[in-house]
Length: 266
Ligand SMILES: NC(=O)c1ccc[n+]([C@@H]2O[C@H](COP(=O)([O-])OP(=O)(O)OC[C@H]3O[C@@H](n4cnc5c(N)ncnc54)[C@H](OP(=O)(O)O)[C@@H]3O)[C@@H](O)[C@H]2O)c1
Image (cartoon, rainbow, N blue to C red; front, side):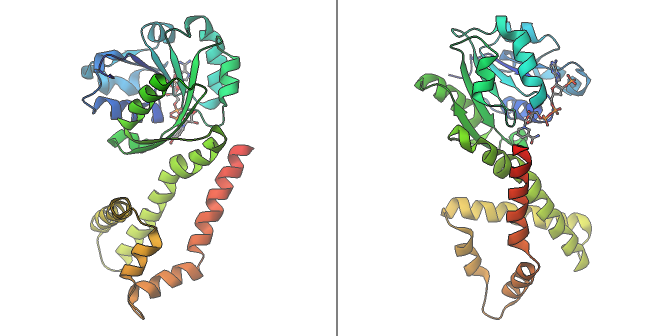
C-alpha cells in the first residue's frame, strides 16, 4: 500500500529528518516517491544519493505528492498553508501536521474545505524506527486513517488518540525523549563516580534503559512489578532507590511533566 504513495515532508528540519530517516530505512516505502523540502538544502546534502527528492519548491513537492507532512515550526504552519491553499485538494491530498499546539480546526480554516487533516506527534526516535507517535484526525475515512497509521507504524509504534490529548502526547512522548536522555546522562555520571570510564558507563546505561523498556513491553507490566523483582529486602537497590526518592526523583519527574504541559498552554 505504501510503496506507491507519494509523500512530501514540507519543512524537513530536526523532526522532519527523523521521520524521513525512518521512512528511508523501511522497505515498504520507495525513496523516489518521497520529497523533502526546506529553504536551505545544505543540511540535507548527505541524502543526495538516497533517491529522495530534495527541493525548496513547496508547490512542486505538494503537486507531486498525496500525503503532505508538515514539519514546520508551529508559527510557520498557518501562513504557509494560506500560501499553499490553492494547491491542496480534497480529492488528492491528506495533510499531516507535526506541529505542537496547532489544532485541526486552525489548519482546516486555512485550507480548502473537505481536505482530510491529521495531527501526528512522533518523537525523534523515528530516526531509528522507534518513534512513539500519537495521531488524531478530522476524518472517519477508514482507508485514510489506515494509511496514516501505516505511515507512522513504519517509523515505530503509533496510537490513535483524541485531539484534546495532543498536548499531553507532546509532553509525554516527544519531550519524553529528552527526560529519559537526561536520566541516562545522570546514570552515566554516577557510573563514572563509582569507577567506570565515561564511554563504558554510557554503554551500560544505554543497554540497561533499553532492557528496562523491553522488559515492560515484553511482559506488559507496570514498572513497580519489575522493580519489586530486583529490590531484595535490606539490599543495595532499595537503599539507592529510596535515597533517590528522598531527593525527589518521582516528584521532580512529575513536576517537570506538568511544567512542560503548562508551557505548551502558554
Ligand atoms: N523536535 C521534536 O522532538 C518535536 C517533536 C514533536 C513535534 N515537533 C514539532 O515539529 C515541528 C518541527 O520542529 P523541529 O524541531 O523539527 O524544527 P526545525 O528543525 O526548525 O524544522 C523546521 C524546518 O522548517 C524549514 N522551513 C522553514 N520555513 C520553510 C519554508 N518556507 N519552506 C520549507 N521549509 C521551511 C526550516 O528549514 P529552512 O530554514 O532551511 O527552511 C527547518 O528545517 C514543530 O512544529 C514542532 O512543534 C517537534
